[in-house]
Length: 371
Image (cartoon, rainbow, N blue to C red; front, top):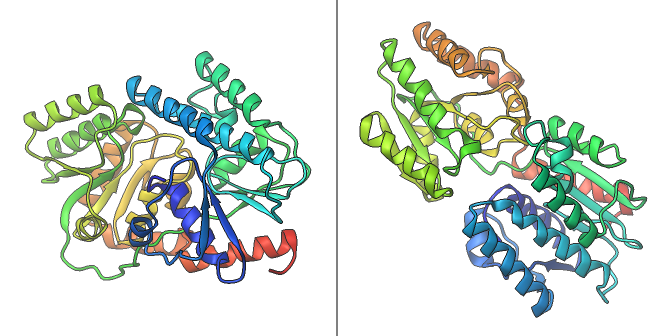
């Protein structure tokens, strides 16, 4: 298991259910539960970890290898397809199967799907991937392997945002319920002295648009504002990472932080006023939600789930870099950081972990009866 949004949801779901239920965690890669409990501040201990047989795991390793060689992480969809096929042939009878990443559909077992994005249908519903023919063929192959169809009578669907909900409804026949993912970050209300700088969080890859954000901050500086940018995230795409590193050499206001520990990240965010997010059509945007919880004012593209996190405030959403520069300039020049923070507290909808677990318990009780 990695440590992204799907893993955060998985840990919170298991934590919500393990006291009163017998839980098997089905995964291709054996997780380090001690690390995950510490990272997500969870207490998941009374579960059984089950891994598919050697053949499934070998195919999973092959997909990971392809992803690393070609710097194309979407081969991970094959893992979900393999898990679906394994579960279809599983000899264990389960009362309920819950997927916390991609869609799972089983012929005779009720399924609850927490869908971060309908990856099996991505090229058909994603605004930025509709013309990627290779991706479309790969997704069709994965749907065949995983027995995924547009209809499933015994499936319940949850999504992380209204944006993902709309995309999911174009992919499968369903009426999903939106349950924002758990944000396990303390809410900081105080307006102590913060640096007049920006933080962005995300892997260094083209879709995160890190270089575009550097250009935005450079233009803001050209308007007379002494701001800087901290870039937090792993070097995921080698070529793109080198371009970002070259820009850092040219501009002293750029600080490449790499991957940070949880405590270091919270400390960095808590000491800054502003955040900036570059990925368009974000499925939700957990890093943006963490920024809001920790008192930052984040500027985000005006499409996708991240705009919902900031309450669709026009002051904080942009469509083009020059629009972002204008809006950042306006807020800094008018010293309206405090006013915008107040608006965010009133309009933003973010689940903390306890709220998320309650909603998950209510959903399961509704679908399969009291547990």
